[in-house]
Length: 570
Image 1: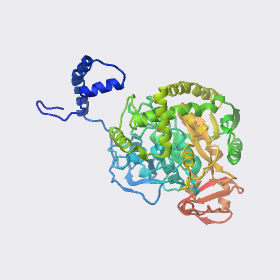
Image 2: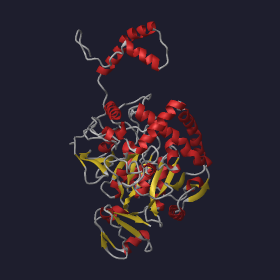
Image 3: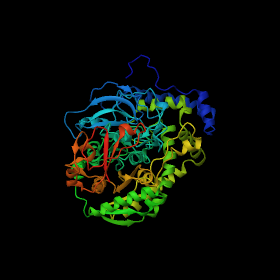
Image 4: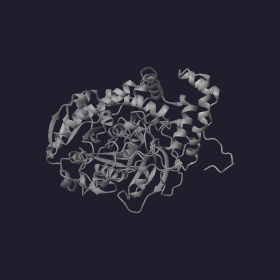
């Protein structure tokens, strides 16, 4: 605080009479000279409060575990920054390696958020989810690259370079949590934390053939992560197996002591990792009719085959129609366009008018970058910024307001359907991964490669319902992964874990991919759990990432499998 008689540098410069007059004219207030002089005198006292706030200690999120700053990864675009942060000796995540999406702060480790505008910024705080990973014994290996400002459904716009699909390097890995999906799919980490404001966990999970979850809105605290728009921000787990997804959710979920406005207080977190092993027999699953509209033949066939397998496991399928689902994305679009513009362009990356913890250093860094070089934004963000400003100036955000008013109506439509079934099920996306843009791609092609907004994804960001994408298999059209999405009731995140039995099975309680790493097995032993007619595709991602075709193995022979392979039961 200020010592008596000593001069302190002012936190805020007082506006001059000329500036007051200019602002009055800009705002069309038509103030008189007498009024402007009164304002000048009044501001002297008002700004004393600003000085006091500036000199009070700035609250900080805790940093509990030692680390070195690490290094920039130059040989694999899925990584932005490599580091080595070891957590507690005990906990749910002991032995698990973790990647953190680069929209989430890790103290002492550079954070770029995929954009040149933030390059050079290093946070001094750990996001709450980072602290929870480390408290649970997780081992953080680095920051996973993401698309520029996390506002792309594709994987080409990151300022550090495009992230390729592990199955085919000419294909999209999905955005914006593209680096997370690639690293998990290739076995470079066991799990990752992504962010989802319109499908940014579930799109790359579907394209890369892994598990990705958008939990109930507010279940996982968003504290210390870069906001896309406060009403649709979600953080969530990305893993190879449903069991690991449940494990990571259990470690991350929980109330954050009023630091995050997205949360309501709640006392306890279910033991998702244990409860997710319940029998699925008798579970009621609503097959969402509107969720299959416009779906490619290869995707539809793959999903239908998985639905048939669910019935064999004792699940009861029921066709469900929710006509309002077809306009869910239309309701979502003004929220994301105008909400992200208000949060990013005018809210300096954090937004405002909410209670909780504001990462001020991140906000300041984003403001400097946006003011200095806004032209460094990619084509999709320039498009969104122009449209967002157009709606603000000419329509005063009335469509944002109308959309937010319609969200409870959309939410009720899903809630009513979920009274008769335990979960809803549908394809995650209508198609498999598309081609990445090339140097010869037109502006229109580059823009379209970013705009992967699926009606089966964005609606649930708006309403907050939990949604899980799992690998359903591979399209017979192009051999690429197909995702199937399970959506549950609000705050019933456990329910969406329980249908894994129809797709993902385990050998001696270990995920198939994990069991075979470094192991040897015969068809006879494999058949004890899976049947001698079961086929397995083994994808060697270490080779596949560099463009060589995936190799197919006949399980009737004995093989020694090496680290880096993932296995899917067909």
